[in-house]
Image 1: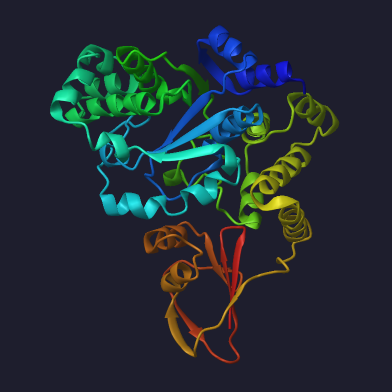
Image 2: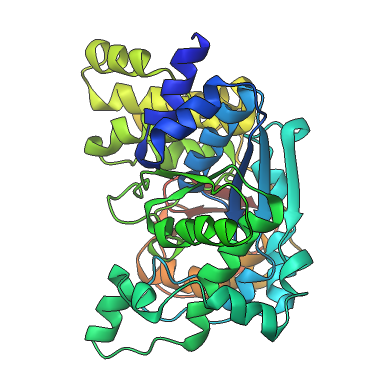
Length: 392
């Protein structure tokens, strides 16, 4: 693509709104190296491909020569952003935040160019603010502006509690833009108020207000909001086989949205795919391969596709099932699932068992049974449709 085409791709592809579009377009056509901001609050150790949509947009800025600034909200995560929540978000401890941060950059740099990325922690400047300074920041906004936000208004109308600390969050995210002198901030549509707060505070500090680029929110594979609590996320750290299998469960009506938001396939090529592959399954095979290749490379994507077709089309088991050796004896199924990293917690294991999502030797398990391990008693454990483990 030409530079002008790449600029229009940045401004239009998967974009809900730009504030202000003409101004940002003129900056992109100029010679100034822009500082493009994206903030992550580490409320979970995993980044999913819904977040990956914003990372791909950042990568497009990098490919035009601009500087990406990733802000890890190690301080804002302690307060909690309720922009997309219908109830008050609990405060995290510093220990939880540090644990969640451990693999963040391993995930981010699967998509971003590390050499063109500046990574900072907002505790660096937010911890230094005193009550006098916070008061001056707060004076730039009214309570009416805060409570007019859709979800806050909905909670108040329903008589739900809105914590006073929640009013502080937009101040902090806005001040992040001041601290790094952002030219552009990228975020989901739920972040509009917080990103506009950045413009307000930059003007107060005599900086040029950042332009705001809002990305459409990518729905989960089942059509609901992408959320770990719904179990409908495709995580950047998912292994290739799991990622491929999850992508194949995406609802047919969401296929185009995933191509647009979660891949860098040119729009013209997406239209060709729709014309030449009328069967949604064929479209999803291409989509799944593209997503896996983005995170695991071509070889990993090819292998995942091969295994998927063998397993689900030919009803075969995967050829590369991992094995785990245990001493002779009896073991709790839940404990084995957790220790083998097939589930994230005992509660998840029990939930999957109750839902009929665990099989032992291809039989559905309905309770946390004891597994008997012996020399002549090999076991095959299956979690969902894609995860397998041999116990010897």
